[in-house]
Each structure stands twice: as C-alpha cells, then as structure tokens.
Image (cartoon, rainbow, N blue to C red; front, side, top):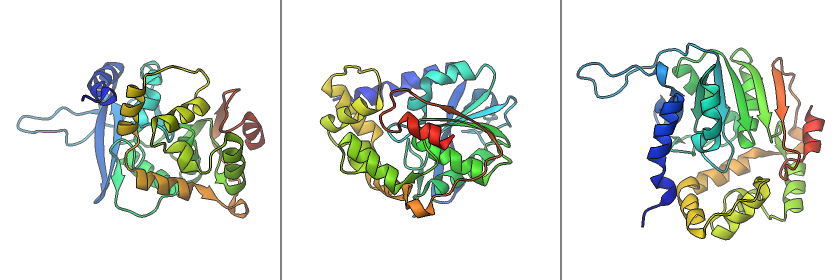
Length: 270
C-alpha cells in the first residue's frame, strides 16, 4: 500500500523548488552527512560530462537558517515560510542529524554536537554570516550556535524553546502534560501516541484519518534509537545550567497557548 506522506514528497520538492530552494547533501566528514535545502541560485549546474553538482556558489542575499523541531524534518516544519522569505533572503533549511536522512557515526548526542556539525555544514555551503530561526528543539541548537559562533550568527529568532532543558523543567513539563518520559511524548509509536503529541503541540485541532497518522509515523519517526539518545542528551542538571551573554539581537516568538513551554518560561528567559 502506498504511503501517502511519502507519496506527496515529490510534489513538495517541486513546490519548494518553485519557491526557491532545493535539496543538497553535504558530507561534513567521513561518516557524517547532513541534508540541506539550499537557495536554487547557489546551485551550479553540472558541466558537460558531469553527473552531479560539484560545488555551490556563495549566497548573494542575507542568509536565514531555519532549524526544525523534534517532530518533523526541516522542510516539513518550514514549508509555509520558505516562499515568503526567499524574496529577500537566501534561505537554508537543514535536517539535523538523525532527521530527514542526515546521519553520523559519531556517538555524541548533545545540542552542542548538533550545532557544531550544522555550522560546519553551513560553512561548506559558503555561509559566513546568518540569522538563525529555531523552533522547539531547533531553538536549543540555535542558542548553542549563537553562543559558540557569535561571528557567524548575527541575530536569532527563537520560537517555543528555551536555553536548555534542565531536569526540573523536564520533570515539571512531563508531569503537567501526563507523560512518563520525553520519548513517550516526542517519539510516539502508535496512532494514539501521535494524536496525543499533536493535541499538545498544535493549538488548532485538525482531524486526519488514522491511515494518514500511520503513514506519518512511518516516514517522520525514523532513527528511533538515535533520537531517543538525543532526548537523553538534551536534559542537563540544574546545577550545570548557565546563562551565556549573547551579543546578538534575539527575538522571542511565542504562542499564548503553548502547552509544552509555557509563556512564563519565555518571560523568565528574557
């Protein structure tokens, strides 16, 4: 039986190319490959006798990097924003490691690890400076990027995220939402579990048939072992939590009814 979520990918690829971005894989080092959606104008067409693109041109407009959350890969998360942004910006949409085909054989699973490889990938694509937009898990990665690479990250927009997931925030959030672990919430393995995640993560309740939920589970929740390890690597002790001094402009964009990271956390962070 055809997976409906997988079947619509060619259509999305075509729509995204019309919007101005196309997929491109970067081998950061042996054993580590990160997938990106990059500006179409940076992709050098293969020469005569060449089968594929050998290098990319540097971006010609200010760069915006859109970093996805935990429940979907990059372009699925940001598909509705790309078209509006490509008119004025060179837009890059990465798939973080263990999402959307990005993979590594390295054992580290921390947000710092994700940030380091994301920066390496962007540099290989010719990006020298950028504004980073991070959603949820991607926001924590974005904060690490800004902290470690202030000369690259000029400004940030962070939505529904926090500096770091401390054990106290993790316990309070899970208890309030009625989940026993982050994996139970963010790595559902059943239609019931996916519906529970969507009921918490989405403000507007949308109805989809169970068939579509099953197909989404099959396509979007790959690399379960590694993603469970990412969740374990996300939580730090309260005593290890620090507040960096960020030189960048930071814009916090929040949903009033955010159930995972309450608005109070945004005000505290500010």
